[in-house]
Image 1 (cartoon, helix red, strand yellow):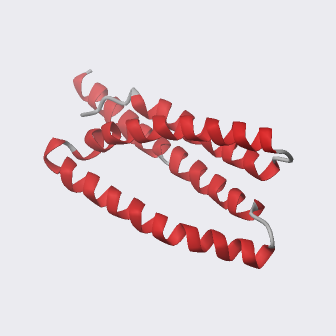
Image 2 (cartoon, one colour):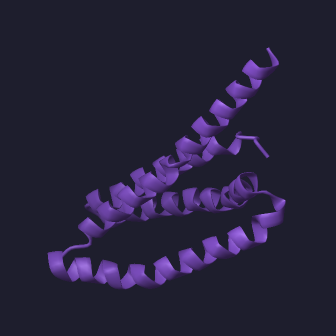
Image 3 (cartoon, one colour):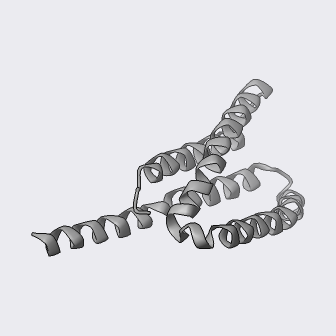
Length: 133
């Protein structure tokens, strides 16, 4: 359960995805916006696919169904709240730029938070190596 090979890939995908969402805010024409949206969708697919393995690696086989259910529930609840929140931000500021900046920041945090899991696994591995030395 301590295989951390997917974590760096997940972090890179999350950070790259946050950058492409940031490009949405800077887009001045349709081609740039559509290209960044396509790249965002592609990177999001990688994040979703790896998410199940990361949940399995984190909670184990016996708790995976409950963890996936909780993650799916939270994702749905946030999607339910997200659209009205983006609409409110647009109404308050007159632009969607701030919404894209917020989404970019949230994606960056959700992608890079896995650094702490890598550190935890590294500390456990180093501690185990010191015990056997």
